[in-house]
Image (tube, rainbow, N blue to C red):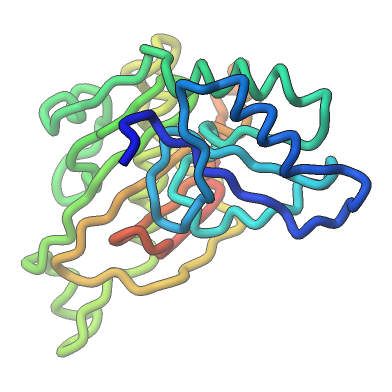
Length: 236
């Protein structure tokens, strides 16, 4: 088994037969021999993901891909070759990512029990992406009523956990340090699988856009349990 960092490759359905996506990926693989390019499977946390689209529509299915959007590199033609090559080098070998213990999480987020829904952070790139974890404690009072005899984590908790993961991205920046992160909206909210007591949830968040002059940011959040996508949303 190779010890090289793996890049998961996900292809579109081949909507543009005039464009040889596979050939271009092979060129990129030859240009980056220090990485291993493999087919991207759902739930696998690759160092980065290469999204080979057949055109600029970016129709490749990335649902279930356990790689934050900030680490997904588009490839839709020859013009993307050099930018994709440089971006993959930055993502795979860049040194700006850090991890946070629970005590360090408390220095970034203002939330506290029972509303703190982040335990630890395995990857944080301020202003870009975060990967965090949350253990769903069976002793939480919420399970007494949701539902008696069949406990399921309420969807609003999943949404809040994804939002707090997104909070890490912005509150770790100097310009937002110490601020109170307020929910302004949520769109494209989907709950795919139930989350149960005893589960450990892996939370992913990536910055999609920011209006610094208004102190507003939009992030994509996703929640996984054992590699299975359970919830996703765009939070503002």
